[in-house]
Image 1 (cartoon, rainbow, N blue to C red):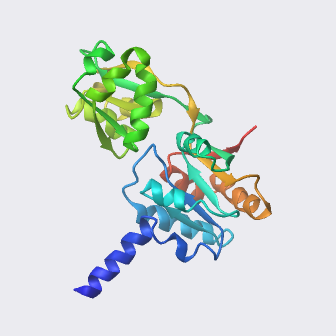
Image 2 (cartoon, helix red, strand yellow):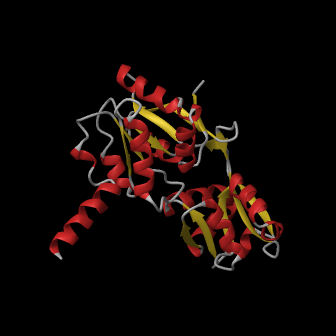
Length: 261
């Protein structure tokens, strides 16, 4: 029984980011944490990327489900950090010297905006008082997006809104259709997906407001990339050129990378 527990503990720590220091000095690593989504299968994500990266330069991939563990890993040059634009700005405010190297793309776009959607009987954001709003990602992130959409006029509503955390944007908008939430925060692409999957549910929704546009997933480095980082960034940039790499990118919610102009 003790042996089974030990194996389970090691596996859990490994896939959730607690094991990153064990090989952090071996080869450059791509660290991943996204405040805008909740990965529910770390083992699949890590295995898929490790197989690809080992075959393209001997690199490794380490996903995290805890923000503090990811931030603790931001220590040395040579590694690449995949994170949301919102998270990058928060770290830069703390004087963490991360700089954008690549920006994720989706259908040719590098930016997205978030939408606050509800059923058509919710005609105004003021009606969200004492309701549930569903969203993917960290609660802090969802609160910040909701605050931006509500604006100063309705900011006081935040304390009376309960946040329902779900894995993906599509889950957030479907939660409204199933009566689990009154409204949802999602990217516009999440609504597009709902329109294809369940057009009847989609027609029941309307938009109460939009956030400002922001970048999709970002690949960042500590200060200006050196030669080692540039080589790993090139591996990332070319992932969309292979079937295997393209499939891996879809696990991150993007279909390619673009340099910041």
